[in-house]
Amino acid sequence: MEIVILSFFSSLGILLVCTRTLGVNRVIKHRKKLDILVTFGLPALFVGTFSGMITAFFTGLWFTIKTILLALVIPKTFPSYGNQEDRRNDAKGNRSSRPYRGKVGHDQARVSVLKRM
Image (cartoon, rainbow, N blue to C red; front, side, top):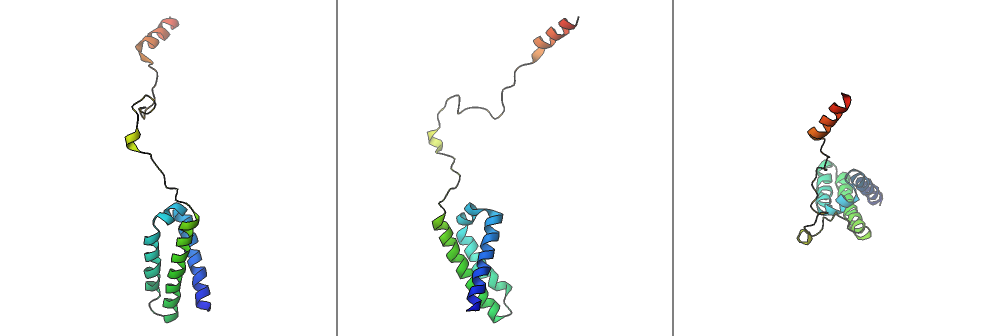
């Protein structure tokens, strides 16, 4: 029984570290990869002991259950860049990335030189 409880808290710690470093949306997005990594990678660390292996497998099981619940509770809010076919060719949509800078040009420079004289 204590192995199950220890594995529960271990998986909670791993999930907290993943959500704090990657963010909740990325954890949900890469949920299956993280499940495989925790379920099969963690027992590789505890190959020497039987209780370590069992705890690691239970941790992977708890981690999988928690990520499934996390995906159900938090809606998918991945960034949406819109439909590219819906782009209109108007002035608002076709702004350049460099803002327009007024022409300082030669005329203004001549005026300032003439004012000094």
